[in-house]
Length: 159
Image (cartoon, rainbow, N blue to C red; front, side, top):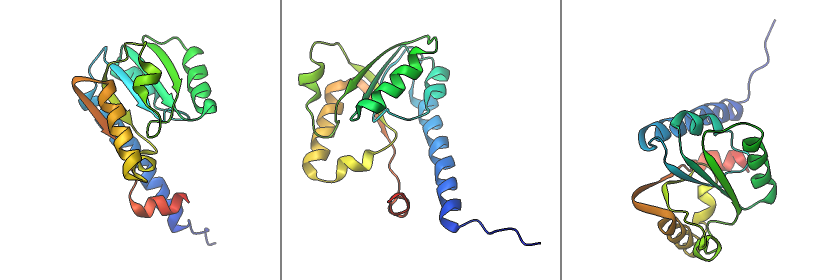
C-alpha cells in the first residue's frame, strides 16, 4: 500500500515554522532578563505567551496594526493570571509615529522585538526609517531590537 506523498512546500513550511520557533526561543532566552519591559511589534495571533512567561518579564507592550490582533492577544492575556503587567496599542510600526501615540506613557523598553511581519517594514525606505525611528524611541539605552524575517523562498510560499 502506498502512502500519499507530502508536498515539498508543506515540508519546507513545517521545517521553517519549527526553525522560527527555535530562533524565537533562543533570542528570548539569550537577551531577555527577568523583569524586563518588552515591546512586541505585530503581536497579534502569535502564540509566544509561554516564551514570555518563561523569561519572567515584568511588563509587556503589545503593538499590532489590526484591532482584532490586539483584541485576541489582550483577551488571551486577561483570561490568564500573568505575573507581569501588559498594555496594548493599535498602531502600525512602519507608518505611524509612536512618539505621538505613546508620549503620555513611560514606555521605555529593554527589548523591542518583531518576530513576524518584519519584511513588511522594508517595502520602502520610508517605512524602514519609520520603523527604526519608532524602535529607537522605545528602547532604553543599552536595549536590544530583535527581529526575524523569512527568506525569499518562504515569502513566496506564504503568498
